[in-house]
Image 1 (cartoon, rainbow, N blue to C red):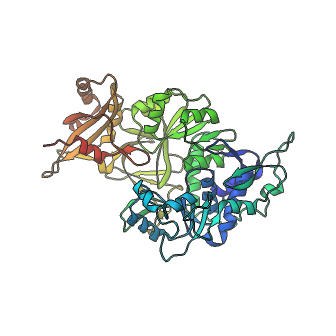
Image 2: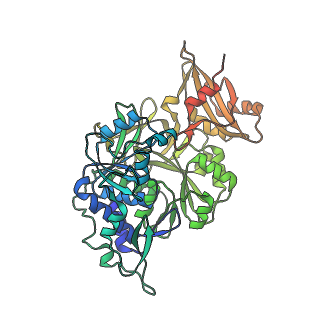
Image 3: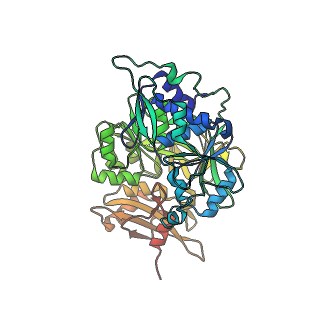
Length: 531
């Protein structure tokens, strides 16, 4: 089975000296060294992690990549410790997953233990990493120096790496990292690099003979009540299938540099033998130029901020992927003029990815939000009520505690234009006025494309007595905005029943979540008339 672990190990066998990772400070990590580190973690956890949840609390970086891959290679299932959740939600998630391991940064042990009160005052809520599920024994592996709160007997990543990769290895440079001296391979001078037995011998390669594509690899929580957490269970097989779809959607191979902290773009880079460049927290445009990045990912609202200050991106950048939220026409136009080819990814946690469309295709499409042709192997079905259902090899195995999935209800209303998928909006955002269903997503892209409009959203305000809804168009104006001209243009792009009762201008739309998605509930509150 060729999955996220075995694919990377194969690259390490073939080309151990090729650069696999560039960390936030610009330090390069070879494929050979990455393989050594992953194998070190796997070997340490293998006897006890198989079939166990691994509560994971490590911020994006080289250590996070190593620990995540090593945990999965050992048969564990990653459970992300999402900060900021209410204590009862965290407790319910721990009960549902029953982690047998905690893999975390030492500072987070401190913040979830001795400094918990201080962390809570700063808005950081974490499960008690020392004892996430009282009465249930766990093992601990931490990265970083020992700090107060790290449990007695916890394993240190630096010590794990020292044990498996001894110092003094011939032909290696030594890198100081987290108090450990870890060898970093470099090719002998004036000699073509060749894999050596000490780089990736059969004795140190992970045993993949018993690997099943159905092995759970990660539980990703989306939503749900405290009594019933909604956890999406992905397997090694479903993740591998999703990563393959990304690789097929755009060229990616040795010599490319993918600058991102997103696993679902960084892992395909490693599988393709490319270099995964991790952001260092500085100016994105400067980092892209310094790393000579060829690919990157951005959330639309973040890209908009970047392009307002840096209209032209570095010439090395060939592909810019957009995702996590719909991209307004204004952002797409700026992105098209920034240099790289701009691709918008339609995906959901349960199925990564579903379809990809270019910015030019989306801008040229007259009605609705064009998603593009579903990717090879991805099945789509439109239900009688217009909701989109998705299936395919990349589909999550199941929701935690539920029956296996054969398809997933996306919550999106959609239609097919030939073989192209077009979104009409979220099912829950549908507006009902005078007995007519109004789909905001059918009109919002076209309204946003009008002169003087930065963003547009159509929301409904229900009458508490009749249930009939007032239709309100909220717009963020741009230079040249003229409401009279907007009202004249609307009948040309909106069906008569959808013409708004009123138009409200807003300085900025309310947003929520890591992707800064439009918060329609908050927007409705903003445009509600006060009496």
